[in-house]
Image (cartoon, rainbow, N blue to C red; front, side, top):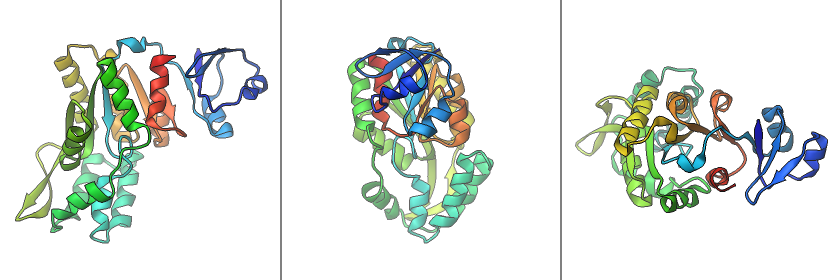
Length: 266
C-alpha cells in the first residue's frame, strides 16, 4: 500500500518507522503498511494511504457544506441570535456523530427557530460564514482542470445557493427553510436532504456529467456524509467525526482543503 506523508513531516520520522521514501514535489510516498491513526496522533500530521484510483480521471468534486467547505454549522449560528446556540449545537454535534436520527434532529432543531426574523440569515452569511482554509485555492485548482464542483448540505439553501454563486460552484442542493411574513416558520419545506438524498444527488450529478460514480470525489465531516462517501471513487474526511475518519479514503485533520491538491499533482 502506498502512503502519502505531507511536507510538514520531518524525514527523521522515516527512520523511526524504518521505511524508504520516494520524494515528490507535493508529498512523500513509501511502500509499507502502518497504523495511520497512531501516526497522525503521535506526530499531529496528516498521513494517508493513496487510494487505488487515477486522480486524472476525477471529473466531479462534491463538498458537504457546514464544517467542511465552510467554517460554521449555519443552524447553530442562526440559533445564537435566539440565545439557543448551546442547545441546538449539542443536537447538531450528536447528529453529525451518528448518535441521533438526522431527520428527527433537523426537524427538532428547525422548530426551535420559529419566529426568527429572516434578516438573521443575512447576518449569519455576512458576519460569520467563511470558506475553510484552502477552500478557494482548491476550487480554483479544479476549475483549471475542468473538474465540476458542487456543494450538498443537510443545512439550508439560503447559504448553499448563495455560496455556490459567489465562489463559482457548478451545482448546489440543500434544505429549504419555511418563511412566512419575513419570519422563519420553524419548518423545512419539501424533502429533507439527509444522507440518502446526498448520495442520490451524487448519482444525479454523475448522470448529468456523463461520468461514473468512480470518477466522483466527495468531502465531508459528519455521519450524514457517509452514504455519499461510500459510492464515490474517493472520499475525504475533513476535520471529521471519528465515524467518518474510520470510513474515509483520505483524512485531513491538520491542514486546509488545499491539501487535497497534493493527490492530483504528485
